[in-house]
Amino acid sequence: MIFDRAGQIVASNQQEHQQIYPQPGWVEHNPDEIWERTQSGIKNTLQTSNIDPKDIAAIGIANQRETTIIWNKQTGKPYGNAIVWQDTRTREICERLSEIGGKDRFREKCGLPLVTYFSGPKIKWMLDNIPGLQEAAIRGDAIFGNVDTFLIWKLTGGIHITDVTNASRTMLMDLETLDWDAETLEIMEIPRQMLPEIRPSSQVFGMAKGLLENVPVAAALGDQQAALVGQTCFSQGEAKNTYGTGCFMLLNTGEAIVPSKQGLLTTVAYKLGESPAVYALEGSIAIAGALVQWLRDNLGMIGTSAEVETLAKTVEDSAGVYFVPAFSGLYAPYWKDSARGVIAGLTRYVTKAHIARAVLEATAWQTREVLDAMNQDSGVELLSLKVDGGMVVNHTLMQFQSDVLGVPVVRPVVAETTALGAAYAAGLAVDFWSNLEELRRNWAVDFTWEPKMSIALREQKYNFWRKAVTRTFDWEE
Image (cartoon, rainbow, N blue to C red; front, side):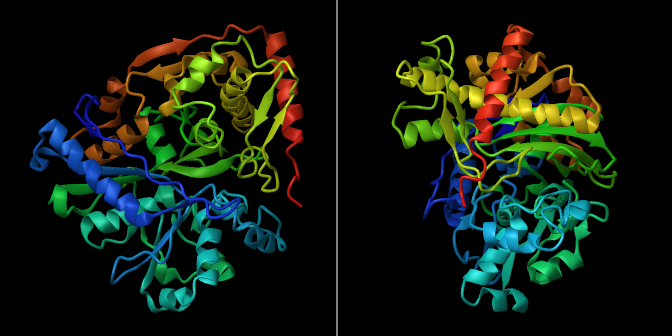
């Protein structure tokens, strides 16, 4: 995506890449395909916009955060497919590491529980299971990165770095020092020399080669942190929720590292140049838009993702059906790897339209659980929720979201705030924008949904949701 000074989209190109499921619980991507699609995306966007690469001020990257790639430093060839954030193959590793100190063994340092979500255990799995990889890593030939690091390495011809937000999702970085933690690396048996250098989110890392020759590569942020920046949530207490493959709510906690007692994650929100790091509380939901894709691709109930709303609107409610999509276990606030998906409340009356409605409502109910946890952890009652991501075009979902939260839900004019946040961070690094206030002035409301459901009905439905969630617990032995 190319943005102008007003934060408006000038041109864009979007391409899907393959989701690979080798066996139940495993989710992979092809790193070479990601790089190929990135290049064709850049090429197509330049062609349709007729923009000369020389006129581009800087490049920012937003990425899936925990998705783990290991490749050869000499050849650039990956040692295997990327292990995606949703993948659960590291469950045994996490359980083994939890035997001493429990699931929160590393939480004080890294802000994260020991679960399959994060990169550290994925790196360990690859080192343990790919022949010769441990030795290659010790030699310094095999190097690791999340998708940001891989793309920066490819774009710049070999600069091996990551930013603080992505590093904070590995379980390997100390939140206070913003550096790799030697003790954790030793426990997980991960050689430090395979890890990228940790940099601020907004800083010139190097110059691009190829299609964007000599354009500064000047920012990297994990996708959810990028959306926080794109929504201009720069003040303590501001929050956003992104509705994509998963669903992610972040609350800016300022320069304070706030430990969670309610099952949320403590993470780095961003670090702009030499300014101090800003932190956030995050509620992560594994399956949101991915449930609509599942309805489309696995069950064939709809032909396109957009059709889910058309189908759901043919009925007034879900007829008591609740769909808990614990396909990869449950994330915040439960963190139960052994949970599996459940459809509850079925009767002969139920049609595919009711199931479509329950699919949309699942995202809203999961968000309610995260918001409740956030209120308890932070002591801050949210007055409204800024939303973004691919699903916010769905009026039915957004209205239901407002109904079950009991607060207004606000969509900005530019809903693609993840890409916008990466652009903002890159622009700040090269003085394309001068300060945060200038970015705040770009933000504008497109649509606001106000709550319409009665409190009594909301709480009655919510009780049924929580009842359905308990049915997913400990399904896997």
